[in-house]
Image (cartoon, rainbow, N blue to C red; front, top):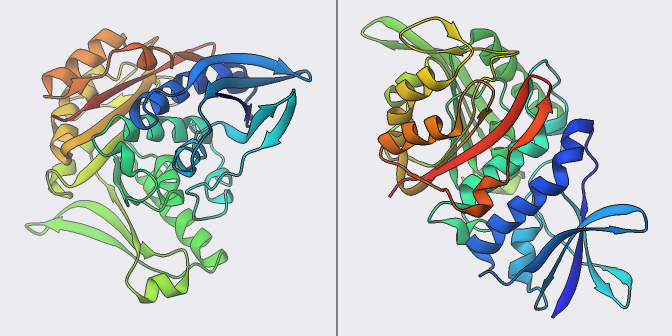
Length: 344
């Protein structure tokens, strides 16, 4: 049995940094249950040399184990504790691109990149395909994608990414950013953007991109696909086939920077009306065994209400202990939580 110490990645957001140890312990518990056979024990917070670590014990970690653990959202470095000294453990992350893909965009209401990664990880690990995380090219859709933080994290992992958002300015901002970034990084890609029409009527706008991390992969047709639609989320099934997505990952409007806009009404601080209309559509996007992860502001919607809406849409909400540990304060008006549900 060995002891390990996980160094938390320094966060630019002070409030999130304060919550990061508790969030990491909860995320690590989901990893442990989903893909590590429960072999991690004694998960705790320990101060070593005046620095906070998340520590745990385990049989000696295998390459397979570290292939998963390397992608923990808050992972900065992992050490094996040997006679009181820290021995670095080599980590190989899924990351395909430079991290400025995620860090360059700055705008009011942007979700913390570290939390976005946590939300994607926990959703993936709750699917039937969790064991394939290091090798499978997942299909991820964010039906409330805004300016694309979730899409960029999916691309970073080498996944296919899709998004839907009703805000035209956000669609245009993301379309301009991702195409500029790809050109500046000299990443081989092909992009198309234009209107989508049904019966001669404009129903949305769409950005489609094919890209690859290197030219050889692009020439061989080994490409990632990015597909973003400017339309109402309740119409997502008009643009994406039912059962075509492995994961649905969404960060609901918090009712502070952004309100929720349902198909049947105007803006509202509560996301519940939007969720009630959209949840059956989102469930329809998922293939069997896929999972949905949703973050929201608990000040404007109760967890039980959100969970019930997802259950009514035919999804199995995850309610056991690891999933109860993601509540954290963002600011004085936002306490954020995560709910995850699987499609049986």
